[in-house]
Image 1 (spheres, rainbow, N blue to C red):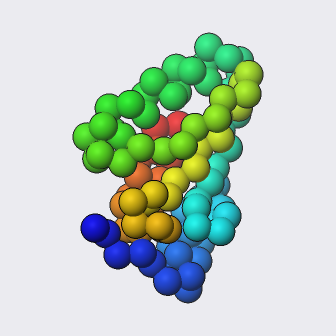
Image 2 (image 1 turned 30 degrees about the vertical axis):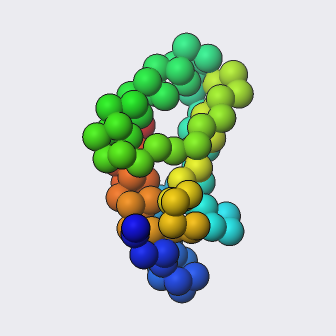
Length: 93
């Protein structure tokens, strides 16, 4: 099982991620698109990297917005895997 980062470590790593914010034991970003189809297309782009990493984000789609939340559920908080996945997701948009 992955090691949960301390609050200070999580804050330091979150500060290095553009467009992401620390929300308790999660990091989160909201992506806005032209419409629903574009939002869903973006979500579909997440499938392969998430599957490859074995690390799946929590997703919420609201018309043209996708809220992406990352945490390591099995570890009970934020781990290195969350920040690596956030970097991958950031490159997709």
